[in-house]
Image (cartoon, rainbow, N blue to C red; front, side, top):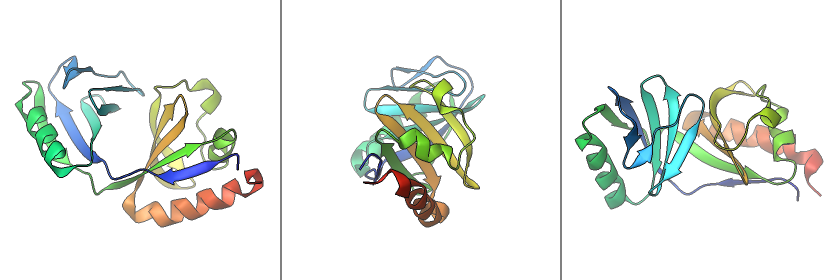
Length: 159
C-alpha cells in the first residue's frame, strides 16, 4: 500500500484566544498558516488571536494543560473542543496525490510546519503538513463521509 490513513488516538483539543504573547506552555507561537510543536503539544495558528492546542489524551494531563493555559497572562479564553474533531494521519508515497483529489491547496509549495483551514471534498478540515505525511482534523459530524471519500480517492494507489 502506498497510502495509509490511520485514526490517531483521542487528543485534547483546546481553542485558546490570546490578548498578546510570544509563547504558550513554553512553545513559541506559530505565525499565520503554521504550527509549532514542543513540550508534548502542537500549537496551530487558527486566526489572528486564536490558536488550537493539541495535547495528550489522558484526562488528568488534559485538565493540567487547560489549567496551565488559564494561568498564562496573555490568555483571554480557553475552550475544550476535544470532541469536535477527529484526527486522521495520512502517510505514504501517494498521500499528497490522494489529498489533491479533493483539496485545492498546493501541497508541493507547503513545507512541513504548514497548517491551513480549507475545504476537502466540500468538508471543512484543518490540514497539518508534517515531515512524514499529513495530519487532518475533520469535524466529527463529517467524519464518516470524509473517511469514505478518502478511501475512494485512495483506490488507485493501493496495491
